[in-house]
Length: 246
Image (cartoon, rainbow, N blue to C red):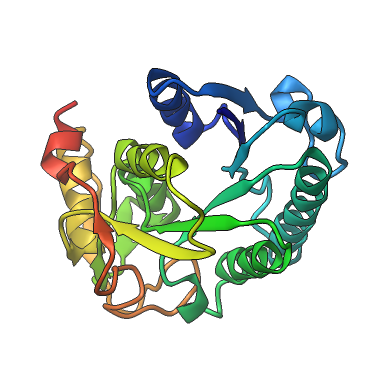
């Protein structure tokens, strides 16, 4: 089966492509760097020719509210049109756990809008909603740092390894479309501030972590249910300690 991974040169795509290949699929990574632009449509028709399945792992180049909304809705519509023309039978997208419960985040609103475009496209689909990746904890710490202090929320956090995200996608590729959502989270739930401190300790970073219930998450108000999975979610196998030791 030919699987085209759009955004396949990014974090999850680089992990997914070898898994698909090992499972006997013809896995093709495409991105703007390979001449495929999901916003202008350049290269899309050629990239999707003969594809059975498309996995959308694209991410917006800008996080401004208007820009990110335009990116995800435009890219989803362009992909859907190209997939219809190519006869694609299964569309995958990677979005975010509980995106619909954090409406004051422009990024989350954009991911929900992307999901709505996919659901209305008429193409059979599966949407994997994952929690935040272990690989992003350093970025979270950086964004929360002021004058050497990392002021980060103490709300519950359930990050997952990028390897586990790729593994679930690879597993689902061979299954029928869900025409719905499946959630994925990590095996541990702790305050975000605890995860950040553990990460900084391992890399010998001396910044002080200040747990702050009011800190929010990139400007959005959150609580203990915002960044954690609900009943029925899939749980990744990789613990944070295991990931830190790699």
